[in-house]
Image 1: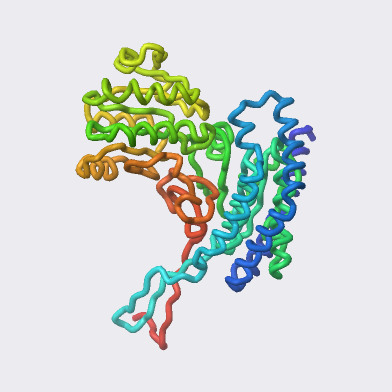
Image 2: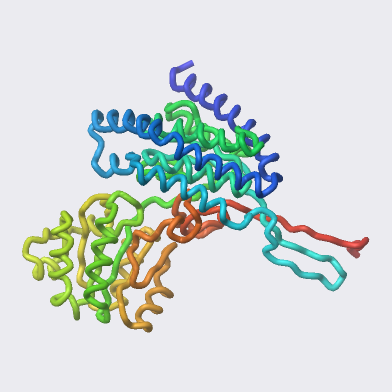
Length: 426
């Protein structure tokens, strides 16, 4: 037996054990009282606050290893926990707990002429596998959302965040225990062996949905190898279009925030499109704001003619998710050209139009087919927490089942409940 085969068999046995425990736990969790699931999240939130110093110490180990490995600044930013980010995780759990119970909701109800009463009713998805890389908060967001929606979750974090994620996973299980719920409703995969990822992707009949959170290579692997359904987005190539009816002050503040607030998140703007009628008046000022904030600009020939120190872009720039302080800029001759550019180069994540024209705004919102479309707002709002969901597991850019921020409602399926009084079919 080769070493690779041995690793694969060991990983498969490990995932099989986790899946068996998860399915047993989900049966209890999925029929538990809503107040118990709420209590589990609130208890975990209190543990997060109480163990802030331990979390910072664990994260310090992860950061030291990341720096030693020469990982990028954007990667390290995603990995870093701070006092405020730890508090955000606790608040996120508490906000999730305020959401309506997503289980058992009556989605539709009707009666047939023969007297049958039919209800479409929400149910948990079952067992969810989450595969992620550097963000420790994914541990909390994913576990919290899954628990409230009655789903067991198997979490496989990356080696770069193993100390932070392990402690956060333990905190979630203690929240479950405090609420009288099975601790195996939340399980961390206790190995960084990549064979475990392959075992999760092949767990047909055990894991109901896989959700990847990470870089392009991770998502590509999941989408290529998974034999179970996947909620995912491959890239966040997000656009801002400055229409000819845009307000300059709004455009300046929105563009800088959309690009520079946090450059390493999937909702960061990567391409700026500017209508030719306002480019000469607006682009130099916006470019100066971006450059002052430390952003490198790459533009087409029309854009570079207006901003002398802007680099010339190539076709690859329009297709690139930089996740860094770099922005591509293109001058377009119409809203139609802007929409065509987004359709050709975009990843279906988030796009925003800056305009004071209701007609142009509605045209953009209607015709752009991305998971999230905005008007006069920063693309950095592409986040479940900002949508009032408390948190999200990710942004789904597919068109089946879940699209946009994946919160508790997106982590449910449904069943049909039929009530009769002796009817038989002729």
